[in-house]
Image (cartoon, rainbow, N blue to C red; front, top):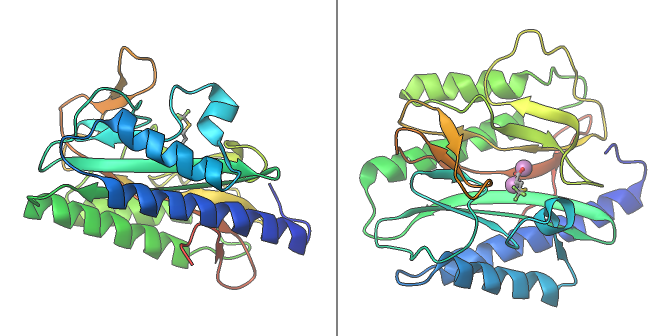
Length: 249
Ligand code: MF3
Ligand code: CO
Ligand code: CO
């Protein structure tokens, strides 16, 4: 969406914060031995307590309130009977609606013992999200996001996934601009129009960067079994620095 007034900003900040709090809460609840369905139920209850509705359910009748993806699972991991193990790399992605506005945020974490290479992967992915956010300003080329994300990935010897990128958000979960690639697309000529709401969500993998869909029709997996990391925020474009709607406080 493109924001029209302060009400839009208020609505987006309200749900953005709830998404961030839900994500933070769920990350704090992660324990080895727990199933992803149990973790998802905690997230679902937290959202309900704040009157927020799961955007994946609302939009796609997705079989879970949140997406929980472990190790070789890249994104859209369906909560279920998988038991969280020591050393797992877990991504939690929370998107939700309140009063007609939507927020979308995600983060990856490691269940101890922490593998140093995995830790570095997460740190670099998060830093790249911040670097891309810093580049957001009215009239900048939209392909700057992919230029930065791909550039950082190359620098570290990681790969991104062609199929996965950011997207417009705000009134619905996935809206215009439909796809904000995590790789540089010289032919993408769109500019960041003032007031536009979209997500930035770099994914990095030390593997070959190819995915397939699981038999469950939702979960995306690396074909080589490699891990990946994703960090995501929802932003509003302004003439200056963007407004990040999915900050904790
Ligand atoms: N939050 C995801 C994103 O970043 C979308 C999840 S929709 C689902 O775009 F249906 F796949 F869960
Ligand atoms: Co998203
Ligand atoms: Co998301």
